[in-house]
Amino acid sequence: MNPGELNCRLTLLEESKTPDGQGGYSTGYVPRITVWGKITTIAAKALDQYEQITPELIHRILIRHRRDVQVTDRVQYGQRLFEQIGPPVDVEEKHAYLRLECREVVADAAGD
Image (tube, rainbow, N blue to C red; front, side):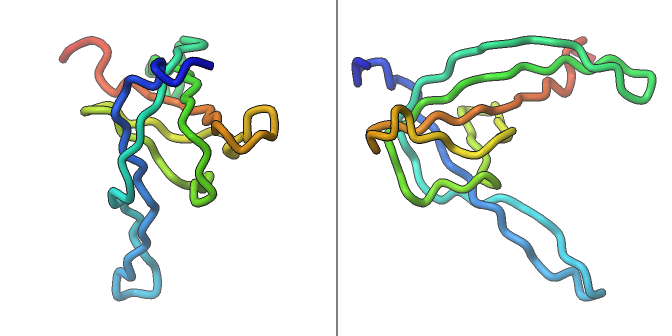
């Protein structure tokens, strides 16, 4: 892999749970680190949920290997937000790159 292909500036967001004062908690995401990566779209589909069609994009994100990436982390690229749909994969077990399979749900595809 050519390292020059890692041309997207990505922010890894860490899950943060805050007590809500009633025995539960609210989940938020806080920026942890910024890395270079490559985003490749591998699938696009439309989900029919609750009588509403929601477009969904599946992406493969490649970053340099890090030991601190968790499956609960999210990836932000500009205003776009990606949610991991599986655990991070050490590409070829060489500790050089991590592959993140992610889902981007397009909230307002109609432009309303």
